[in-house]
Image 1 (cartoon, one colour):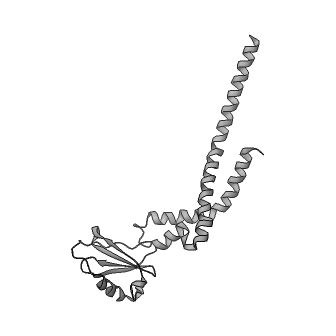
Image 2 (cartoon, rainbow, N blue to C red; image 1 turned 30 degrees about the vertical axis):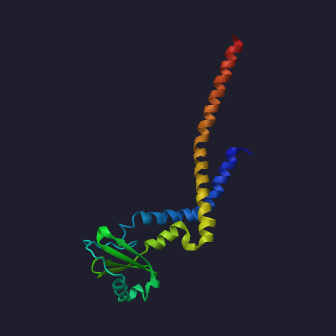
Image 3 (cartoon, rainbow, N blue to C red; image 1 turned 45 degrees about the vertical axis):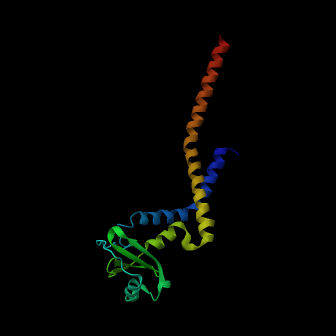
Length: 182
């Protein structure tokens, strides 16, 4: 079986395996690329001047509990807390995917909004579907994409290599013919 034929068959069947995860990775990658510009993906960050001392943790928890949409009863309902010193801001990400922003000095609740970037990121890397899909399909798709890319490059280059080989053989045959005629 010729290498080019086998390469095309591998390239063809890999594309079937790769299509769905690569389309999902591309779409979510675009959303993540523009997440600071698309407020549907990630809420606009409020800006304050950072003043010390920082708000105390119990005050932040009380303020977070005051907004029912966050669904926070205790620190167990909080996925993470982020400090943004350059913006004078503290972000609290609730387990339900909502984001609360607080003035870092006073602890005043500035805004609560849906934060979709974490879910989009989980879709992007496959972790949304669990480890079996993340490592079984997405990781093997990444390897397949690498193989498809390399085979695609070869499919592009191969006609040029074959043409150069034919020219070289033609030159060698012409040189042998001239040598034999002399």
